[in-house]
Length: 417
Ligand code: UD1
Image (tube, rainbow, N blue to C red; front, side):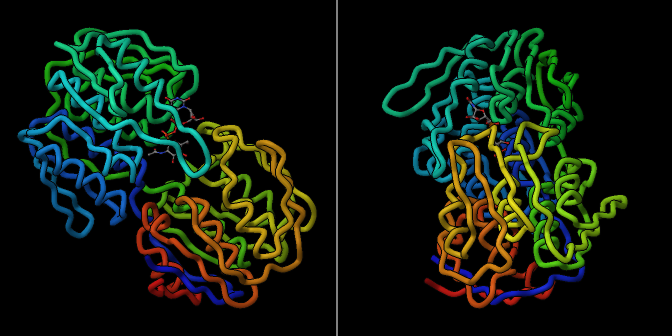
C-alpha cells in the first residue's frame, strides 16, 4: 500500500486535462452486457474501479482490453451470471450487472453490497425497481438472486432519486416488454450519458435529465461505440485545488455545463471562475470567504464535492456551515482534517467549520475516494509535510493524480508504505 507525501504550501498554476467520468463509465461498461457484441468506450480513465469492472466483466465471460483510453469489450457471449463477493466488496457499482443480466438472460446472482466507510448504503430501490419489472428477487446467503422469463414494463416511483437505482432499472427496462416509467429518477449527467448511449444502440428512452424517464422496451440493444463524458467531480476537485492554493489553473476537456453548483460555490468563496467551451479557468482568492453549503441531488451541490469544499472552508475567513443531505454520515474526513489544525464541529449531518489562518502538515488516513482528495487539498496548502496513508481509495477515482498535481507545481510523491 502506497502513501503520498506532500510538501506545502504550494500555489498551483498551469493546465490540467480532465479525465472521463468514473460514474459515467461504470454504467456503460455494464450496459455492454445487453448487446451481445463488441463495444468500444473512449475517454476511459485508467482507475482502480475501471480494472475492477473489467475483472467483473471477465468473470462473467466478457473479456475487455484497455489501451490509451480506449476500452474494447467483447460481450458476444456471457458465460456466468454471478458477480462474486470478492469483487462486489471492493466496488459497490458491481450491482450494475444485475439489471442487464436479468433483462437479457433472465437470471443474475450478485453479492449484496455492504455499507461504506460513512454508513449504510442500501440497494432496496434497485430491487424494488426490478421487482416492478417482473423479476423474482430472493436474498440468500448474502447474495441477490434475480430471475425472470422476460421482464415486462412497469411503473416505478423512487422514494429517493438514487443514481444507482435509476441506472439499474434503465439497464433492465430497455429490454422489457412494454413501457416502463421511472418517477423521481436521478437527473445526473451520467444518467443522461447512459440514456444517450443506449438510445444510439436502439433503445427507446425519453426524459433523461428530468425526474420522469420513459422507456419503451425493445427486442435488442446493438453494440455501441461511445465516448465517456468528462468527470465533473475530478474537475471540481482540481478547481477546488486551484482555489485553496490561491493558484491559477486551466481545466481542459471538462464540461462546465455540468458544474453550475460547484462553480457557484467556488465563486462565492471568492475564486474567479471563467468558463469556456470545455474549459474552466480558476483563480484562487487571497483569502477564502466563509459560506454555507447544502449538498443535494443534481443539479444541487454534489455530495461527492462536500469533503473538498470542507477542506477549502477550513482556511476561510469566518465560520461556514455544511449540511449533508444525501449521506448524513459522510464525514469521515472530519477527524482527519482536524489533524491539520482545522476547527470543525459536527452535529448530525451539519458541520460547522471555523476558518483558521493556516493549516499544518500532518499524517492522515484516506477513508474513501472523495474524503481522500480533501486530504490532498489540505496537504497542498498546509505548512510542512503531509503524509496521506491508504491512497488506494484515491486511485479508485482519480487518474494519475500525483502526475497531474505535480505538473501544476505541487510537491507530491508516492512512497511505499
Ligand atoms: C452514486 C455515485 C456516488 C455518489 C452518489 C450520490 C456512482 C458509481 N456512484 O452512488 O459517487 O456519491 O451517487 O450522488 O455513480 N438509496 C436508498 N436505497 C437505494 C439506493 C440509494 O435509500 O436502493 C439512498 C442512499 O442511501 C442515498 C441516496 O439514496 O441517501 C443516494 O444514493 P445513490 O444515488 O443511489 O448513490 P449511488 O448510486 O450508490
